[in-house]
Length: 234
Length: 403
Ligand SMILES: Nc1ncnc2c1ncn2[C@@H]1O[C@H](COP(=O)(O)OP(=O)(O)OP(=O)(O)O)[C@@H](O)[C@H]1O
Ligand SMILES: [Mg+2]
Image (tube, rainbow over all chains, first blue to last red; front, side, top):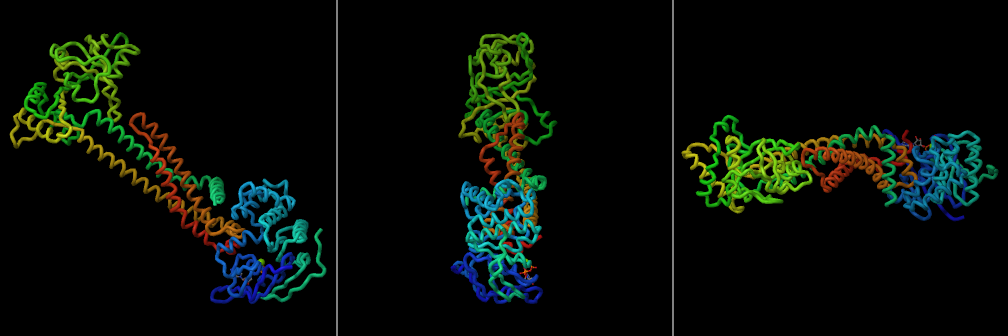
């Protein structure tokens, strides 16, 4: 296990009408390769903010963030975009696919941004879709797919650039329990294949799929423990 | 970078297709603007070419003495009251002028031509062999008539190119006979093809006969002008001289106004330039107006498009699009709307100029097509830059959260 992510004294404050909202209020966190972490906590506790911070969508008001030895808190917009493109795979609660594009095109987009040739792109994108079991849905648009299938397209998109870490913010929040379990199976598979996964959820039984469970409250880490009774989605 | 660009174009096109009506409506002003500018350019460049050819046709170094100015502002009755130009002026001018290289009458009137079943309405004009020196166009086949034939009033004629083809289809007309207003004439030759003057009328449909013959056979009260060939480098001196001689002939006192006109192609040129500037001015006004209106419309649509696609922008940023990539995407969309509008406008203008070409010389030069497409790109960039910049600058988290 080697150090992948290191957050030190991370603060993220918002000014809302002169009042300070401390979305993150001094978070210290180290994440190693091939960890499976779930982040829990009540609504408004700062889970998404932390996730966005780790995913380089947001930069801290204070504190230092190292990602594979690079200092994220000093990066400019383009460097952040590049790190998101190459190192991070996002899976959102609302899927966030491009509505007019086919599954294949959706998965292709990150590769376009990393300037990969067309033929290589198509190969990588379809491989990725095959790995989430959508080999017969390549040419379907999001509105022609079920919720679970859409989320699998989103996972394929997150995986396509071989990221160092996969961030999933409530990935099952918009799915029925059966589709949710399918998604958890895929995540588990990714974990056993050596991927690093961080999962935000407020559902206890979803969180139990992870190896390590972090609970945050009011922008601070309240608990950080190894999950001994890890659920194996099969 | 290339794949990104082609990707941006694809995204732009698909976004335009999915908003066909909206894009078309916004592009309409661009279509109007580009068709106007192209049509105007086409017209002017066609006019220019036709004009240059037509000026050759008349000859810059030929003065034409007649009762009225080509572009005069006299009332018609003023001109009517002027004395006619008389055929005997010719000898007087020849005698007194030191510049005149050739002086020839042109006695013009309408007549009907016939040969067997074939017939045509035409203009005939009587002149002398000196006429050949006052024009660039000579005899293509056969020969011109001689001084002797002119004096004796021989019934001989030279045919304009088209007349020869009409009266003598697939035949050599030389030595053959035809009729002018029922009177038999022998064809001596065929004049060189001249084309249309300003695209309006052509000497190719006319018949030249000796002036002596014309005076004897047809009414003397036809319309007469006198063509005077002068040295090319002495045009204005010659013009002054001819004015002087004509005033002498007419016996005008120093205070009296001219009662004749000495015309020259220059008069055409200045009038032509006025027309050209008028067309250009109106065209540029319409173009600028519609491109500005179109540009504002496109800017507006782009703001709407950015707003509608805020979430998409957030997603794209989350998966690694940089500012410039988003900027390129939206800028390309604005440019595409303009270029598509431009291409439609250009095609429209091209078709229209083909139709106009039936009546008037108009040809679309390639540089004009390139210019108008560049102009569309320019409008697209100007209209798209602010909305695209706004899209590029969106905060990814805010954009993702946007519903
Ligand atoms: N852009 C913003 N401006 C102001 N306050 C914000 C902003 N984004 C988040 N916050 C505040 O930060 C706190 C943490 O928000 P965050 O979205 O991280 O919560 P969360 O734990 O993900 O909640 P949920 O479970 O409801 O998704 C909240 O109090 C929220 O109001
Ligand atoms: Mg949240």
